[in-house]
Image (tube, rainbow, N blue to C red; front, side):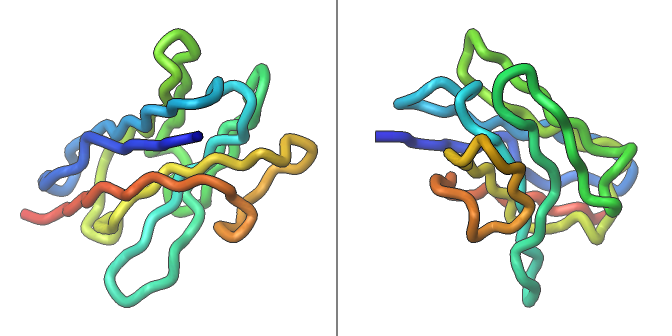
Length: 125
């Protein structure tokens, strides 16, 4: 059984940073494409970024490119999302997700097989 558990959310002022973690159990994190998504109030779930399986290639949404960075720690079986220069529009519930189809890099939420429970990030002064 594959389980994903996010942590690290909270309230932060604009311009500050926050780091989210996603702990994966049941299978090696390197055997998945690992994605991050978010859902803001009243909006659809949107793609934030992904690290592909194996050696890892990164893709980011334009809205977070240059501010957010995904990293992976194979020894701890975790994936992290470092968020810098946060803006009020980054306020959302953030989810990590795992995609078993390593032959294709998925950017759509419906292509992911496993999901964490989500962690709230609020950016406000």
